[in-house]
Length: 587
Ligand SMILES: CCCCCCCC/C=C\CCCCCCCC(=O)NCC(=O)O
Image 1 (tube, protein in one colour):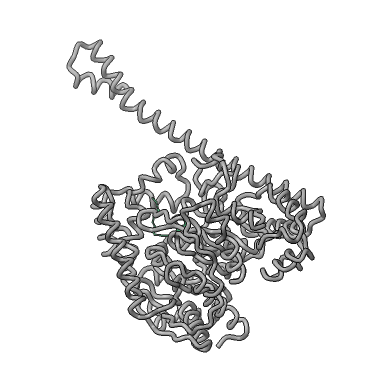
Image 2 (tube, rainbow, N blue to C red; image 1 turned 90 degrees about the horizontal axis):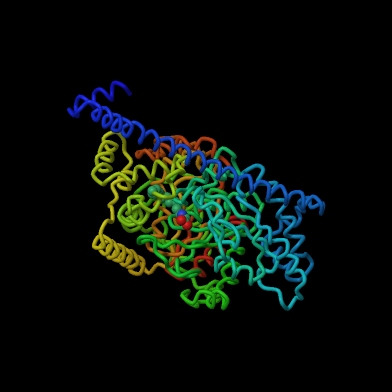
């Protein structure tokens, strides 16, 4: 400090006492201000960590309280209840042979048991018990279609009195003042929301970890990810701790965890369950996740109701069209195994080809197609929609909450001005081959209203051209991979973000897409992946997928079924036909 004062006083060339005073002031400012800033920042970060730990602690004690309460009712898991198919459970609840309270207790106990292994629950919903008891008091004529069905909700789904943190510390203890419309409708149909489930911070990745609730594991392999962002849903349903759940999807977040955890799911057209609200040019949507396709059908049929259209008049009043779901007319279905971004591992290619052969056997016409400009959709529409604001929207949320490595690294990267990301992308290009990731890194910034208008037009033109390619070929639907891989090792997902092109394409064009498991990885699939004459991994992502395929034998492999906008019933019809045919032995 003395040396700085004498250096500054020499420079100031003023009478020495004033000199010393000014120099001292300057030195205090030069060292003191940044030091105070750093100390304040550290203090705020550690306060944030404490707040997050306290929130997790509160959730844990809620779970312990539930465990004690269940113990009092000697509610050990009734496996005969939790192993029932959706149809059997629904029938039992409808005809009164099982009570909503008994089903709830069994699912609560099972969910806690499964959670001990996979850490999928963020909180329990305390009202569930009262809700189930009130349902048991109804007479049979008053029972709704989902009467007594326990349902899990992604943590971001609004529940009155509970916070929706999306894994951000800043969002802790800001309770919702009412249930989300979808939750209100589900309750009016008799469903019993009972737990909330984990997600990655900010829901912008297919990992499933955040600094509040930690990491969720895949129910099939604890060292692997359940996928994301609705990973808690995927894991708890895949682990049989829930039979039906609600996830959300703007890039694949319903479908990826469903595929990784061997369950079924539907990303409806955005607009079908809630009004289209675009994030940039890409609209998010909620959707059902369940153990079988019938659970999704029952969910959609129940929810597309007068209650939904009254609570939110901006939702088009299109009820579930059974005549389309139960249609018998043979269909023209396109298929592809490669989107020209990332080549799928052989298990995934085999799954699509198995579905293709099955549908052919059922009388449908299958034609190979080439999806329209997928890299363009990812880099020019999806990426600017996520981070066209250069991460400004996340700035306040991440100010003192920087312990999620993946989110913070993405934030830092996308805060950089375009020319810096361009140089970084160029350097990366020289060192490796990752075309999708590099294009994503070079995405544009939308800084002015003109940028915004131009991007809106670009997205519209893309959607129009994409739709025309379907109409010209007379396609009713398409089957394709959901991800180019099966469940990845935990932590690897961060390096594979650019592999979401198979799912995110259908967010960009806003087509409904469902996913269902069709097979499991075999030893021969793994051997083929490791054999470079068969799986010639060229891009960085393909190389990672190749390495990561060791140990995937036995893991579920899912595919996507895609339809034209507002054709959820047709997508579900094809999924049901596939599920039924595959259960009875395949083609
Ligand atoms: C400032 C940090 C923002 C991070 C965003 C960076 C973009 C990363 C690039 C591509 C990966 C896309 C992954 C998409 C995963 C699925 C997201 C999703 O569907 N979320 C559901 C929802 O938001 O409801």
